[in-house]
Length: 217
Image (cartoon, rainbow, N blue to C red; front, side, top):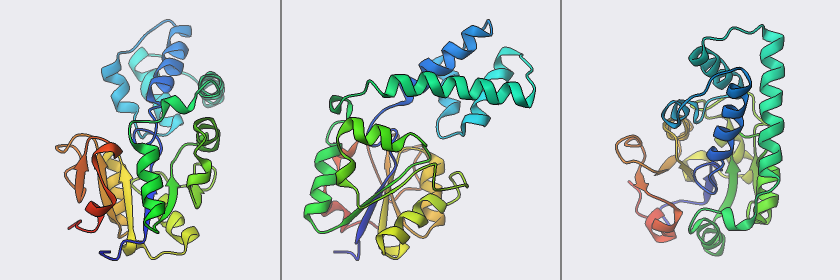
């Protein structure tokens, strides 16, 4: 099988879409400071750390805050976000995601989660899919953000599989770059124009088969 032995999945935008909850929580925060921002602006926050996201938002609102105040604001945003994801149900898994991860396991491939989110475990538990992953690497286990490959290399390490035998599933440019930097193959989930560095680009996990992984360039 084209030497593919493991699949490493990003969480947000690949298995579930929590972006809507991030957007609602950040907007609520912006509104408390007397301004708003658009969904278009929100696109700039995808795959960006909480601290950097807050800095961008404050910039849009022309608001200046001390470092201590920024920390409080970021914490408040996360409280609201956590409240929302705690209401999630298995119905929110993206089409075909559960089935594809299950088919990878049935084919004898190892599976790992590689996400920057510190809330990954909560989300996986709410979706009832924690058991589908042999290793879970989240924001609590890594210090470097994508495009640094740390999160994926740790996933490969925990699975006991060399990076060149791993395929990463990612919806962000930085994630595809991280996979490549780690010496892995990448399947992009989303826009082929944006994710052109990936070995294959599909619109969702319901549009890819385990057999296709054998043929990745």
